[in-house]
Length: 280
Image (tube, rainbow, N blue to C red; front, side, top):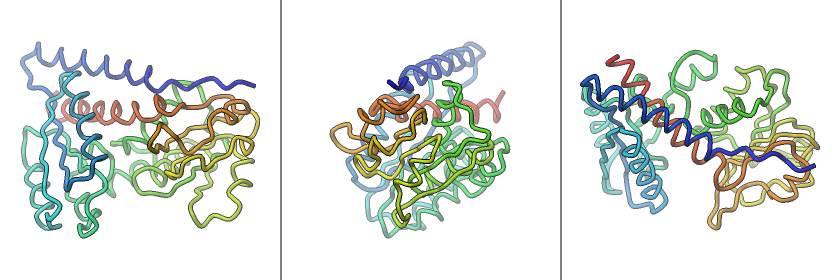
């Protein structure tokens, strides 16, 4: 068996084209462009790269990006004050606090300063609750992008046995909740899980999001399973040993070109939605 590639880059390109068309139409109607403000604390090179990618893609589709770069010495109270100012700014549609923040900052408190209507990255408790219950609202960007990929490739979720490897608040936990809301039976695995191989071998859908290179071996994959690799390590290495896994899976995401492009596309699509909701 040779797996079908789940092409996140191609789907993201279509989504971005739709966003560009919508923002151009708003401009023709005399409306201002949607505005997303990114808040970055510290000097983490990867975070700066991610923010730069988001800014560049926003510009390409007609969304106005604004950046606030703060020193690593920023306190929790200072960060919250800045986010609350953005929350009250009528010209800002979406707020993105780049994760992770320096360890001395209470990241959860900072997230909760973002009002749900501007939480285009889906990180607040209210957004997480809406995901858990399948209610309308903004999805966490990477899990939302994964769900869009699964839908685009006609992956059946009701009744599916799914394993999500990783329980982080940005990816693993919200994705698990979203899959449950769609009718899947979900096992959420993590660093304390005993016999990870056994869980993976029984899964119809495997989502690897642990950030551990080649954690999932190809011979663990159940023949015909769908594999989504949301991990990334230097050298374009994912959490799944791609080549042997692709010989057993029915569908699989590549690294790069799978989950990553859909994360940014989902973030920008939700920024457009926030703008339209606030100013149709």
